Amino acid sequence: ELKVEQNPLFLSMQEGKNYTIYCNYSTTSDRLYWYRQDPGKSLESLFVLLSNGAVKQEGRLMASLDTKARLSTLHITAAVHDLSATYFCAVDYGNQFYFGTGTSLTVIP
Amino acid sequence: DTGVSQDPRHKITKRGQNVTFRCDPISEHNRLYWYRQTLGQGPEFLTYFQNEAQLEKSRLLSDRFSAERPKGSFSTLEIQRTEQGDSAMYLCASSPPGGGLYGYTFGSGTRLTVV
Image 1 (cartoon, chains in turn purple, yellow):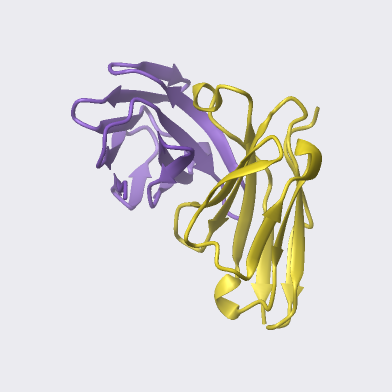
Image 2 (cartoon, chains in turn cyan, brown):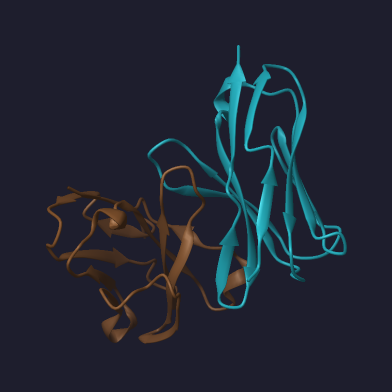
């Protein structure tokens, strides 16, 4: 079974700082997705990465995909409090998504 | 179109009772998925429909669980003889033909509490 691991699981960072969340997966796939989830809410799509070397940016978030290393990163630049949420990566394999365990991000003023 | 709709938003039931959840996908999406999410975990796949055909089921979907998608439109997920371990958020998602090219659109979920 495909395994998706994220690290760190918990991240507390000060406003204005930069940090990277890592997503490793265990089998070949060239489709990876990042979602955001606020407490008690559903999942909001952030990025769709469909090929090796894909890089997408939206505001203070940038995602990249290295299919050879089976690694995706979500980079946060100059964090602000509004980015506090749980972030999930998901790998498309077969007819389903396999989700990581999530990274709970808290941005401290 | 207002996205993927799920009903109810919350359901509290006594152990042993049956519950049914409904999902209305985005109208032009032919693919529909059910996921379950427990506290502190990522969503786990339950089942997948393409139009009205149920094409895949997870081993998590025990014989107490059944899902339908009559006429390829809305879907229902029924849990019979609920157990406390069934307490979770049940998420429905849909995607258009070509699925993975666009990712999924998730509904707001149904939070089930079994007491």
